[in-house]
Amino acid sequence: MDGCEGSFSGDVEEVQHYSSNNAQYILKGKINGDINAKVTLFVNDVEAEIGDRITVENCIFSKHSKDYLFDSERYYKPRGIFLSIDSAKGVNVLHTSERRFSRNIEIFRERIISDFNTYLGKDSGDFLAGMVFGEKRGMDSNIKTAVYRCGIGHVLAVSGLHVSIAVFVIMSILRLFHINKFVSFVLMELLLMFLVTMAHYPASAIRAAIMMNFLYAAHLFLRQNDTFNSLACAVLLICLAQPYIVYDTGFILSVAGTFGIGVFAPYMTKNMPTDTRLHKLMSNAAVMLCTTLSVFPFSLLFFDETSLISPITNCLIVPLCSVSMVAGLIYALTGGLIDLLFISKFINDFILLFSDKAARLRFSHFSSESTALIGGLLICVVITALVVAVFRRRYLVCCTVALSLIFLFISSGFVRSIRNRSTIIGVLGKGNNAVLVISSGGTANIIDLSGHYRSASYVRKYLMKNGINSVDTAVFTNRIQSSYASYAKELDFISVGKWLVSGETSIAAANADISCLGDKDAVLLMNNCNISLSESIVSVKTDTVNISFVSDNSHTVEANSLTVKYGKAASGKESAGKNTILLNEQNNFEIILSDSGSCDIRRL
Image (tube, rainbow, N blue to C red; front, side, top):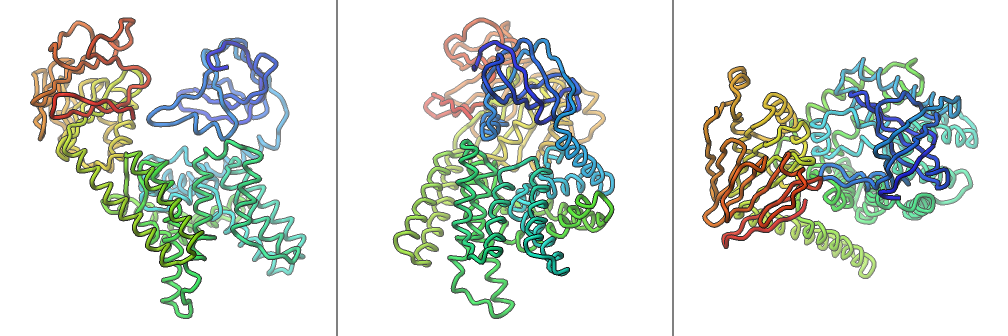
């Protein structure tokens, strides 16, 4: 159905409202009254709720796209959603009284999150909502970066930690009152259903709930539980119901983390003494290290960065997170009757402050843009598994893991040194918009050509993936006021030497951090190249290569240069001539200049 025209009628399963009076609906119904499907619909808010029926008389179906910022295809595929509705016409809503339970759950969930924000403040409340419900959409991007760099980002996804703590608390209370074990099991099931439902049925929470059932059912029927078998059965059951769940990032990380803490760590720490407090501390640290090593390759594969201090922070900070989460969970379970949120506020404020400070330390995190390097690391994972299976010697496993890490860091340093010796131009942005990140000799400059409000997010991701922590100069040539505000927020963890604006003087006069270039031409000098700005032309010149970025067809450029046209020039119908690139919806790429006068183009 990709690219086909038709109609759709289906029930609303999820609703996401946006501040611009738009909404995204996930619908389950039929295409052309015949084909069963789940689709996404992004339109002006039609005030539909869960259970209502939306009918689209005419539309075009398309596959979810993959953008440098967000791979929507990979996000929706595990949920069985393969199409989105574009160019929707004749959108009608039939309000029904169906699925009242789901509606009431959603209303209750939103009320509790609102209470968190009211009593704890925006940042602390969003953090608690992430821990209790796995709701991260409202969190500030810088707070999420700090939390993930600190290595405690897993507390924001409802998974084994949340389920274990919640079940432990409820079962301890039930045992205290000598409740029958079968009744306790039923009450535990109700709690698990509540947690999974309030978190919108994430695969990680479902996996944890299934394993918790195996654990307590074993006690119930006098059987022995095995973590490895329980994990394998949970994965099998989920994959039978949702085969494409193997593409889900949260599911993969949840399985890897559970394997690390429940299988790999017990195997590696089996003979470690635990008779003294020091020995127990060392054993706990080893468990956290094994868990981190199990998750590390996949974190590097799916995220821009991965934490290097997580074994320490998981021992020190996660217990505090658990206390805060229990206070928030008690508030949610009792509908606010038992209010311990003051405990959460005190703990959350400390955690967010600590995370922010730790995230600004260079050694706290690691990133790699090289797919070959990440592929090599995954091969090392396979080799480690073979060593365990064939030799069954712990010291050999330790040596294999250590060699894998040595390979990673040495190879990463080698790749970084090669990039630093080259002049690389990252052309980023959405659609026909363009922002340049020019790196050479270990320094970087940003030149925003279009002033689109989302461009700063593209730059942030690019800098983080390439481990660039400082920028010499950021230049704005269009929509100065909004561009500066966006970059100042998105580049909070990036050190920017100078902010320069072209043409406009009012913002420069009002802000001491900004300098004005005026209407004159300007030249920025870098180690291996010069960057010249003249009206709407930006040229990057080395001894052998000249690349020009122009915004319309009226400008003439040197015959021997590579030309990149953005804006209206890129949306025209004319075909790109020799040595000319027209930006389109897939405009995120790198131009790597060589000393021989040639250049390579690599899609991001």
